[in-house]
Image (tube, rainbow over all chains, first blue to last red; front, side):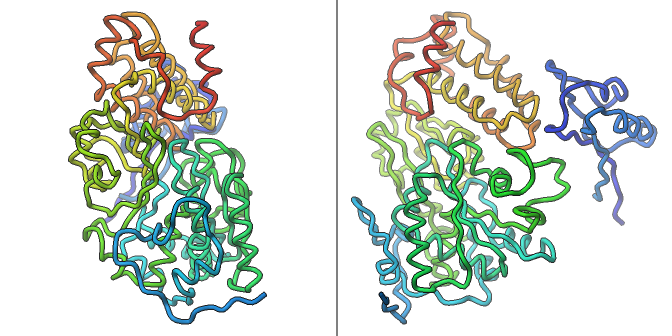
Length: 71
Length: 435
C-alpha cells in the first residue's frame, strides 16, 4: 500500500528572504544568517499541517510550497 | 558538385581510440568526405534507443546520466514533437574536449544529433556552441545540406561565454524556453516535458552524441569491447598540465594516471589533482595514482570526473591562491538568482582570499566548512554544491598549506603565476592587493 507524505519545499529563485515563513512555522523553518529559510523537509506531522498551509499562503513571494509525494 | 558515398560500413576501430580515431594534430580536416571515408555512411536505426540501452552509454557533459533513460523520458514527455539540442557550450574554463571535437570531428557530432532527431521524431534540431566553434559547425552543416544528407534541418545557436551556459536548463532558457538563466524550480515540470518552445527537449553533450554516432554504426557489443561491464567504452579527458592542456581518449575502468599520459614520478611530485573541474573535487597524488577512470571511484574519493577535467597542480604553486581565484571566479559566474548562493559564495570567496593572500590567523577551516554547509543543496541548480565540494576537498588535500598560511600568512608562491585558467584574473588581483 502506498502512502502520501506532505513536504515543505522552498523555491530558491522566488524566495527573497522576507522570513515570514519562519515566524509562522518555527517548528520546521529557521533562517540562515542572510535571512533565507532552512526547511526541515521531512514528512509533516498532522498537527502541523494547518500551520504549514498558513505559512505557504502567507509567503509574499509565493516561494513556499507544500508538496504531496507518494512514498 | 557530387560526392560518392561509400556503401560499405567501415571497419570499427578495435582500440580505445575511437572518437579521436584518425585525427592528427595540426589543421583539422573536418570535411564530409573524410568523415565518410573514415566512418562510412550513416544508416537509419530502428531500435537505436534499445541499442543505446544495451551499450550502457552515459552522458559526458558531466552528469553521467544514462543516455537511453534520458531519450525515453523525452519520447514520453508529451504529445508535441520534441526539440533535440547538441550541447557544446562547455562553460568550464579548464575543459577543451568539446571544442576539439567540434573543430576536428563535427560530422560525428551532427550524425549523433540527427540520429537523436530521428529516434525521437523531433521537430527541430539545434547545435548550441560558443562563438569559436560556430564557423566549423556552419561549414559542416552547409556541406551536409548540399548533399541532402539529413532528414531534418540543423540550426545553429551561439552559446554565452559563461560557466553555467552549458547547464541543461540554462541551454533551454537561452534557446527560448522559460525566463531567467536557470529555470523555475520545485521540479514540477522538467525540460524533458516542457523545454524549448514548450516542447519536450533533449539536451545532450556533443561528445555523447559522437559516441551515439559510432554505436549506431558498429553496435552496442562493439561499444562494450573496451572498458568494464559497468563502465563500458571510452571518454575524452582534458588534462591540464604545466605545459598546456592535452586532450586524450581514456578507456573507462583503466588507470587514470596512465590515461593522462603522466609518468608515476611526475604524478607523485604534483601538489594535487583537480578532477571534474571547478565544480569538482581535489585528490592527493597518492589517491590519483590509484584511481581508475570511473565516476563511481572518483565519487568515493570525494571528487567527480564530471566532464573529464583532470588538472595537475605542480609543486611550485600555492594551492590556496589557485583555489581562492577559482572560488572568486565561480562566485561571479552564478546565475545570481538564489539568495544562499549569492551570499554564501561571496563569503566563501572572501574567506578563501583571506586565507590565501592575507596575514597569519586567517579564517579557520571550520568556519569555511560552515559556509559550505549553508550553500550546499540550497540553490535551484548545483552551482553552489560544486563550489562547496571544490573548497572542502581542497582544504583537506592541502591541509599542510592551510596550517602554514594560518601560522605565517601568504607564502612565497602565493603571487606566482597561476595554473588554473579563470577570466579577468589580473583585474581581480589588483582589487585584492588594494584591500
